[in-house]
Image 1 (cartoon, rainbow, N blue to C red):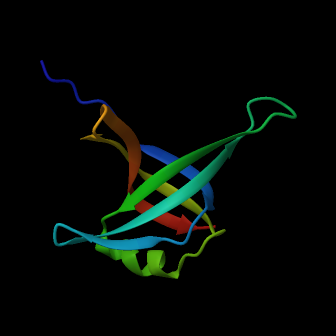
Image 2: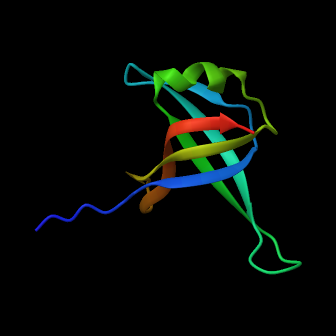
Length: 103
């Protein structure tokens, strides 16, 4: 029996670099790097860093206007990327954006 699990998320954070525009296998993509702050307790701060892939052409104009330091809200899904280097298998989780809002 195949089960479909929800894979949606919404996060808000600051861009830590200017967006990068790339062409990947004849498809365009913007790569955003964001920092998200979390305060689990009073006087305690944790910062998490995420890569965000933007494949939606409708979001390209907004991405081209963003710069390092902009605060954005991202809605999307998680995707695991796997690869091998000379020593071992590697993987990382990225966010694939379905919508982006500048705050």
